[in-house]
Image 1 (tube, helix red, strand yellow):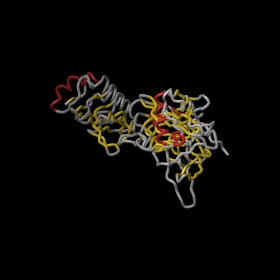
Image 2: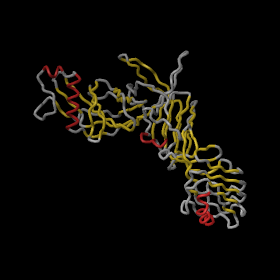
Image 3: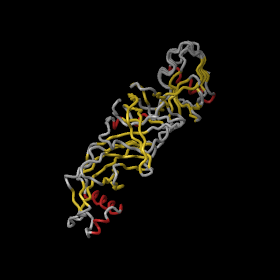
Image 4: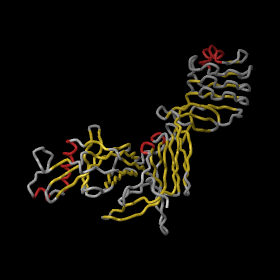
Length: 425
């Protein structure tokens, strides 16, 4: 059996039953941070509220963190967990750790801008947190030994911390998203390279329930005891925003066992089926998209698009539209990028839409068959049409301009590469 090297979950088909796809994050924490007096006081308050200290109260011991009180001690003999494992599906985080030493209670904290905040005291080495907001969260766990006979409490001087990325289903692609399909099946380990942009989303497709380990928590660690790593949710299929996990993402599928404890269904990973490593090269900006023969760079915030090229380099006609619709959303086409159509020797006609404000350097350079250029835009200026924009087009080309801009365009277009023998009208 292949040893468990990481945490992710695989699809199990039972008779005629099918389980929904899941996608979640996994992290393991081994580093510790000191437990402050303020954080210890929170832990003691949570202990009192939990109702677990009735026996200590009955003996007359006031349980708080005051120095005059002998009922509460920090103790080097009470150690925090060696490892804290964290899994996240949708808006639920599950933390688990090994029961070791003499600890019989644990306190779970979440890190905030002002330090760790106590969340729960538990008698079991498993904590479920619901309705967790999207983003990275850091949790800490300290160990507690409650001596019920003496009514004394001992707790670890530090807590073990783990950071996990919670997706919450909010990584859903917008209208202009670059969606990359990742197909994972079988039992063969694989790796791939891909270029990702600010708007790139990975859509994991698999024949198994799938979890992933982000680059920030890339250590793949086996469970350290029979207690293992337990979690309580399988969740739903999610898209993953690539830039949250650059430069790499490890996706795993594995089998699990299921148990019911105290009316709660728990899942424990058993064995990896396959591991898929995605190495990503990041390029700033949004990914280009293709529509009706032209390639665009979209600006989601501004609702604009720039033409960066043509999908067919042998095209005979270029028509830059006023707007382009991508996935149901409309974008104003405001720019023709530098070198967009450079060297397209077969293009004969080009139309420039009314919303174009800029034509980049060498945009039509070398389009030697380009004989008719129709400019609908009235927004171009000497500075916004860059050098060499029309260099090398047909010497007898005709450039048609809006009537109210004809005078201006006649002045500066020849300096942008339009041949002196061409007609500007």
